[in-house]
Amino acid sequence: MQYLKIMESINEQIEAGLLTPGSKFPAERKLAEAFDTSRITLREALSLLESDGKVFREDRRGWFVSPSPLSYNPTNTDNFKTMALKAGREPRSELLSSQLIPCPRNAAKLLGVEAFTKVFKFERLRFLDERPVAVTINYVIAEYFPRLEEKNFIESLTHTYKEDYKVLYSQTRYHIRTSSLQGDIAQALRATSGSPAMLVERVNHDQNGRLIDCDLEYWRHDAINIQSVATLTQED
Amino acid sequence: MQYLKIMESINEQIEAGLLTPGSKFPAERKLAEAFDTSRITLREALSLLESDGKVFREDRRGWFVSPSPLSYNPTNTDNFKTMALKAGREPRSELLSSQLIPCPRNAAKLLGVEAFTKVFKFERLRFLDERPVAVTINYVIAEYFPRLEEKNFIESLTHTYKEDYKVLYSQTRYHIRTSSLQGDIAQALRATSGSPAMLVERVNHDQNGRLIDCDLEYWRHDAINIQSVATLTQED
DNA sequence: AAGTGGTCTAGACCACGAC
DNA sequence: TCGTGGTCTAGACCACTTC
Image (cartoon, rainbow over all chains, first blue to last red; front, side):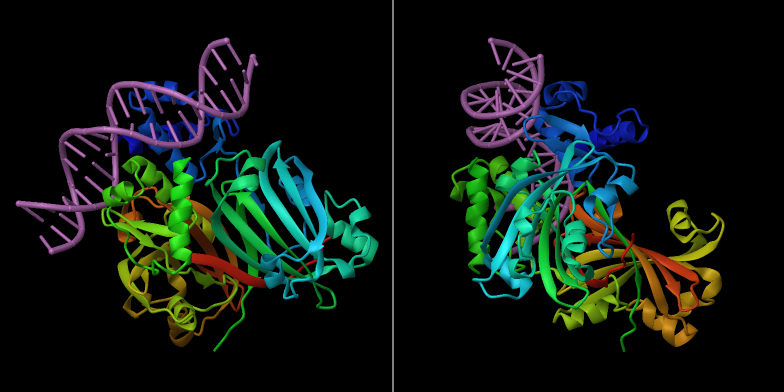
């Protein structure tokens, strides 16, 4: 169980502040030598620290110290930018794709619509302090938002809803589970295929109770933590 | 990238229902031979399926197909037993430890009390269909619940609160993040040290707004998914 | 007692990122 | 182009589970 000692040793250095968040580790071969072990054992140690959210990897780029996670409150309408700014982080978003398409099966299931319904699908890549942390995919029921494709919603969809359509989110059904990053999503996040992820699915209703959109958010699992306050319902 | 093909192949078999939830895989050496690969590569494939929550491991016992996760709603007061029964699962709980102690630092921080305050700490192991899925650690402010140690709260603390003390949960502050299993907790869950986990922290208030307890729940990450509905607060 | 998973070694080649 | 991480091989020993 060398790898446990290596883990602890690296962990101590992180917690002592010797390794700053976001900084890169030395090459695997050098670290392995420093700990007098094989590369495989070293990678085992780093992988466990990755599971724990203490370090992360960028595909073929190396290992880095994880910055502190962003607190995410699924029960408020703060958009990504607002959330990040409140936490003193630097947000940025990129539009990856945007199309008007017949609703794919998985989204149709969430939206409770038939498979032919037209939806806007758009994917955005979210950065925190220039680190890519999430890919968000939105499906918006097209008939409720004419000409949505002409708007500038890259930063905030909620803002466009409110200003241009007088629509406010009022209720959301959310669903959070662990998952893993694959294919294009992994690539966009500069992650290795199979990296652990947090998947947040939301289905949103407007102020009239109408179901208007849903979104799938794939987060690097160390970049987010869910935090909220709930008033409890007593059931008997 | 053999391991991707192996992953897909195993995945297909799971989704086709050829491998039933909870069933054990053949020995690693046999699987490796079947896929004409080395044990290390096979383990790589299984580890990624583990990250994704499709399979799980019991320490030195082998690999198993993950049963479907339990939906966990942090905004209702359903206890573990009720939650499980509603989902058609078979719950069981074991008391691991129970003591009256001065509040340890981490709990004191959550409870907002001084370090000397007396608390009941108790740890329970939760099973679903005889699979150990979570270790829950509760810290209860002792002065509010005299003789709590004499009660039978193994199944449900909420029930004891209500029946014996006329106390109801009314508000909870929750915090969910990925983590990893270590030491005793890993052992209790029959998991390897470093296995991925979901950590749910809750701080609970009673009907008078009084902070009464907190709990830390370490879940095998494939055994749980968070699901809830929220009425949104508009902030401007 | 046999078989299994956990851990580890000492290499290797390739494709990609960084320069 | 050079070094790096991603991937893979072909073993080995031990402690533990299972029979």
